[in-house]
Image 1 (cartoon, rainbow, N blue to C red):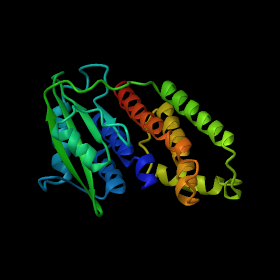
Image 2: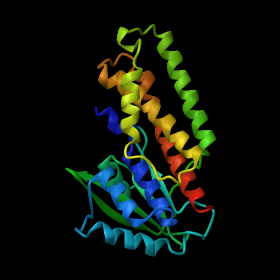
Image 3: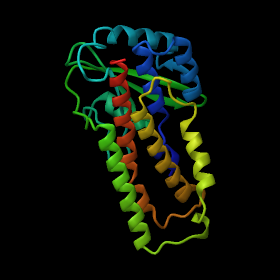
Amino acid sequence: MDIRAEVWSPLQNTAVWLGAWLHGLESTDNLVDALGSLGGHHTLVDGRPLVDLLRELRQVTAGAITASEEPVLRLVLSGPGEAPALRAGTDAARAASASGVGAIVIRDDDPLTSHILVPTVLGDGTEWEWFTETAPLPAPAWLSPGEADQLLTRATGEAARLVEASGYRTDALNSPRLTVGTLADFYDTPGLPSSVPARAAKLFARADRVAAIIETVTDRLADHRIDPQLLGLWRHIRAARMAGVAYAVREFGRI
């Protein structure tokens, strides 16, 4: 199993960049550069270029930007034992599950309409499929950064307690800081817009740190004796990333 695919989400940073751009806080040139770093060459599934995707995003969100306190877009992630928070059985849900990357939900000024962007990584590029839903989607958790951080911290502490209680020991873990630091730097590349609120940035950093620790133990050290204790953190990492995106995009609308 590819641990990095489960604990890292380039779609997190993509969603934040799109949110900042939609709120006029980032230029189109900066957005295109960031998306290129995050996913290579971007196209729609029908072959149209990135500029067409951005143009349609502008159109559908024109009335939704100031329509309510809800963020104009949010991130949807899923993993083992956790289906994406989309309408079950729909083409969008099937595509999100198949891609394994997640989805971005775009709010329309019609409260019953949502637009769902599902990326698929193909070689050195990203292909986007656009779905439109006219029925309510499952309600997200709407965790605050503080709540998400508390859940992640508590889960990390519980995992550490279980690891210690199991009697697990390895010399390779005596000083894993260099490896963890290198991975954390990787997760942060190519960074976030300068307008990202500090609380969201700190939550993303905490999620990256825990993700780096999990990858260090389960992948870099090739030791899977404590997988049950560590892999239980995946869900909380995903929740933290989704909460951080929702908070950041909501705050963009208040700047």
